[in-house]
Image (cartoon, rainbow, N blue to C red; front, side):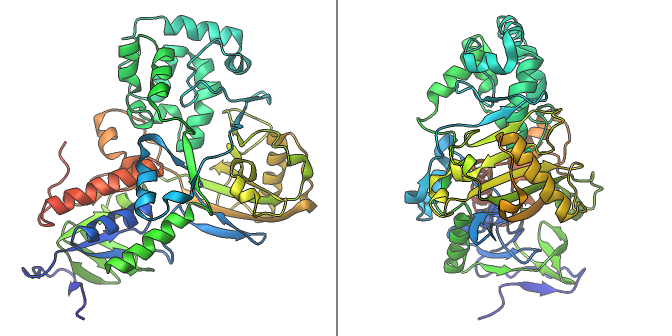
Length: 471
């Protein structure tokens, strides 16, 4: 069998042969790259997938901690729109979709108090300002201010495109700082000022204009959502999604190369290992920093997201004292973590496999934790933080195992308009289509939907000349 690549020396302009199936090179082997490659191959294209590291899956993967196989990255997905569930079903995993425990999460405030998150909200935005759970978090004064602001005409604040200014205009600082920021920051790893309303909650601004108030808009969107949890997971862990995708790529004949960093690319070629490979189309499935580097543009230094996993023997945690986990409001001085997931409470299937031990996942942003932070220091910090957030002092000698995993955080370019909505903060490369969280937004639902749409667009172009995305 001939090599599917058409190689030429760097700088040559050898045209692609006219006969045979078109070749598409996908650069990046995270979930976006895997989904894009699968859809292209199913559509009849030849596909070469290049991944710079030694593994596929990106931020979705697994590791073994204290003898337990666990997700090393994303362990749930948004259920909105049914996007992920439908895709998992197509991969034969539909019967293994599971919902989290219904106890819900808590929020740890800057003053050290902790409260259950209200159940009537959307991204922390209350649907009922008189709900006792809302009053516990924002106080009577905060609720009164929010009610007064939300009684304004619906047009007030509706033109605010970023989450932070939108919530300030409609409900004030207490709702933003004590409810919305912990949830949005925990999900998207960015401050609400740096995120678009239409990206994190499509339709919310339209619902405000339609319903006349933000509380009514939240309730209307919740009523339209399918019954059940806002998130779901996979029995056995989200890493099974990557397993299924990799297996399907092999079945479809996609060539995959690991440890193959790309040093340059354009709409019709990539350079890897000093070799320029000519293709009919190129799709870029890498993060913001890597995308800017390949475009030859300076990039802001990316921050770091660090996940610490602890496996703990502690009977005092058996009852799930803080539900499925805790989100941390900005300004907290008694902990350094931004969130904690009590995974063995959140996922009953996991509790069945741990022999009575508890799995805790804590996330940290830089500069609180950097790659240079020593393991011993980070372990001690995580154990102390877990104790504070769960209200149970943890004995370090009862920690059976721990692990750290780190990723580059999204660049924190403020959300400033339509260009941010179209391409995030990535500088476009003419003719190279882009997929992944850098352009779709974080979360499997957004990434899968955008990757499938991009693959369909490439195929509809006849996998020929690709125009740059329009302004």
